[in-house]
Length: 123
Ligand SMILES: Nc1ncnc2c1ncn2[C@@H]1O[C@H](COP(=O)(O)OP(=O)(O)OP(=O)(O)O)[C@@H](O)[C@H]1O
Image (tube, rainbow, N blue to C red; front, side, top):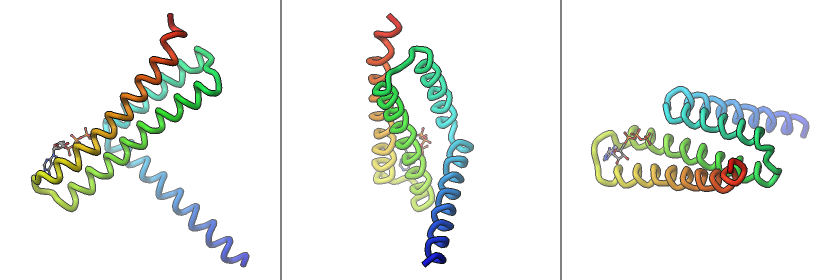
């Protein structure tokens, strides 16, 4: 029983390690990731400056997280498609465009959320 528990913990730790490697390779290979990181740092600093409420922080963290998640999944889909279908194909275009559209939807939501929260504090 104890052995099973230790093995499960080791497997979980290994999974965390691989997930961390995924984040590192995303940050290294994608210029968009560095742009997201810069935007995230600026928004966080603005959040501390304007002393956001806990609910406002939840909304900001949630929307920023959604942008990161969609961008990472978009990158994974692009890489998967480039690997399995390296030639030009209309289906690949549709798949990649939908994935990119998901990033646009999440980013638009994040910008609108940011404007609703920060504009009244700025003016
Ligand atoms: N194999 C393909 N067949 C058809 N269209 C493609 C193919 N690969 C890319 N495209 C088209 O070119 C666009 C850009 O694809 P690409 O893989 O270069 O993404 P990207 O420029 O790296 O995008 P992002 O800025 O989101 O990282 C796609 O959204 C799609 O419209």
